[in-house]
Amino acid sequence: MTPLRLGYLYGIGAYLLWGFFPLYFKLLRPAGPLEILAHRIVWSVLFVALLLGALRNIGFLRALLRRGWAVAGIVAAAALIAVNWGTYIYGVSSDRVVETALGYFINPLVVVLLGVTVLRERLRPGQWVALGIGGSAVAVLAVDYGRLPWLALTLAFSFAGYGLIKKRLGLPAAEGLFVESAVLALPALGYLAWLSHRGGMAFGHVPAGHTALLVLAGAATAIPLLLFAGAANRLPLTGLGMIQYLAPILQLACGVLIFHEPMPPARLAGFALVWLALVVFTADAIRHTRQARQAARV
Image 1: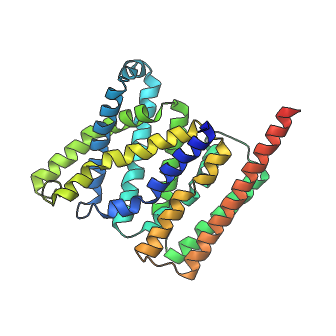
Image 2: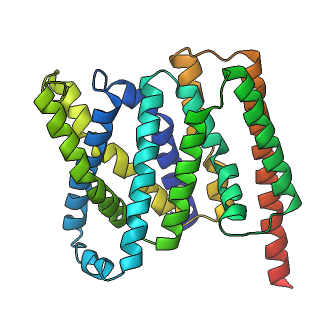
Image 3: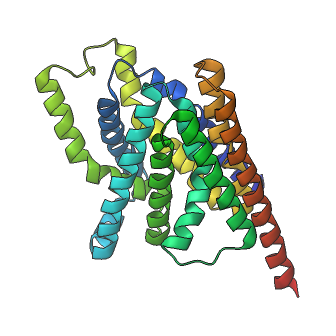
């Protein structure tokens, strides 16, 4: 099998798993969003530690601790991914799967916006058009919801910021996830201890199947990230960009078709504007990549 085909298989596998996450997190009730988040963090640390131990790759920690700026970046990345995970779990638990899907649809546009505001990048005309359409979509959805779609915006901005920091750090997927989860593990364990003391923890007080699902949250977190890393190492950015929409499409389908969340005409119009912005954004990216390749051949 060629590296390109293997990359597409890894990428599709990652986005399929992320796309069906709403079905998984719905099964974790009656555990509350914060308890689910804490279990996701703790079991992620254990799962990835076992994986790194099997690969005999624990030694990277010593080199990492010598880079003070990298440690600060990891703490910031950990905070952002905790916000992202917690917001997503809350959205699914509160029957707002459609709004979580919106967050990941607009994430590529937020990445471009951060490129302008944080990295001082200059945008191409097509990217400006996509941002303008995306801003109009948020305005339409704000009118429909009667408020800003804050849950979607929190997901989009937290994940875009996380991606920005991760790109600067350059850590491999497993090692990065281990360190980020380890930073969050102590607060997560503290919260679980406090919840258990209050008698409000679901873990251990629900059927064994539910307890097993909470434990498997670590593997469910790590596996798609590792698949994504395998895809990112083998695919061009345009190929990876095209399949990234698979996850929010599946999440939207789960929200509308399985959980029967409402999709009134105004909300559908807002989503249509988001999709139009993504079409413009993707077409511009493909055109720019082709022009760059042609220029390189000259």
